[in-house]
Length: 168
Image 1 (cartoon, rainbow, N blue to C red):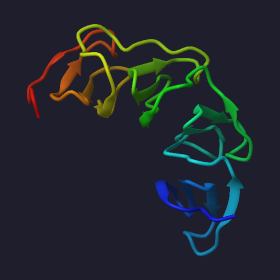
Image 2: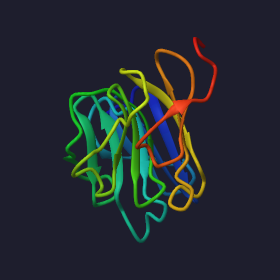
Image 3: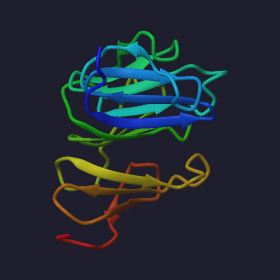
């Protein structure tokens, strides 16, 4: 059961999660020892809840789509997002925001339904994104489409406008 190529690392105090081609592995001692949690292959992105001790929800992105675990990464079930590449996950709460080959997608119900990509963006993949630290109160989202440039949304991903760097 080899991890293979590492694609994501998520530390939370002494606990560390590592995801990659061979699945999801977990350490409780700052990475001194490791145990496999899930052998779902081809995990490209990993996102834990902010408080894993109180909320053991874990999201992983695979070739099959976005998967959700409610038991700390031991078992996973599919969300409604499948059939698209996923490049980044952010969970500012209560929204989960996904940079995908379909553009930026947002869910407020942990993946049961997604909305997006929003008006004003070129069609195609979004390969990078960043958002306000206070997304709930200040719903600013920046995205970088694969076609170039940076786009800004001030309304939580409903509409976007160019923020420069066209052709870059």
